[in-house]
Image 1 (cartoon, rainbow, N blue to C red):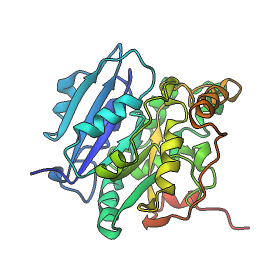
Image 2 (spheres, one colour):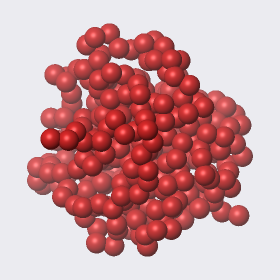
Image 3 (spheres, one colour):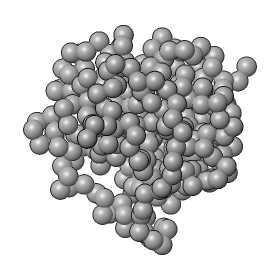
Image 4 (cartoon, rainbow, N blue to C red):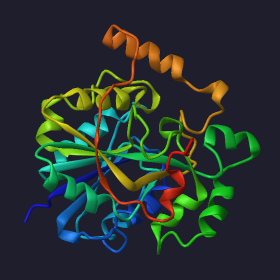
Length: 294
């Protein structure tokens, strides 16, 4: 029997971070879904220190591992390959395998596919720590500090506890009703991903540059798709030396990313304007990120 949903996880030299992410996709952690409802396809993207395949595949029978040999520092080809390998009619894409998921993401993604005829489901993102890691890195935040932080909350038993030790990503700074320009965990029908052209392989900047923003805008503008933001769920970025997330703001590669975007699209980048539907519920831990009353 085919799974309803295929979750594509892209990893690159994430021996420390990926096991936590994959645990957060395990049937024992995810709530309201059965193991046979979904599969997880892990694409190891050109890593010099890859995960052991057996370590991934023993998490659950529905976990698959594929090593993608490439010299590219962009995840674009890996994402497209993962979707091609997917057995489910719907695909969820986790572009950055260093992000831990909350326990209700898969349940609510599947609920969105039942509630809407053709949804584009997306989530907000957080950084572990008191502030975004582009800032906390200046105060000494690193992997050791993050390990201590994660040890301070029983997130494996209650993934929503992660909200208490995290800060909203800059792309989501307004909280639950932010107007987003990208999502690091989104889902849609596999056929729609293909129809939209997938991730444009010409985006070859490190980390993919603005390819995630490019696809997000494309999906939100597609008249056939209904954007659906999941309330109360999200992903939490672990410190792993990310090309854009783990550098000081003064060193952020936005300008190089934008130059590639302009060259490929012939225009400056502008975030999409759209009105999403909302689905989900806010746990007590998640309510601290409601917009402030003025």
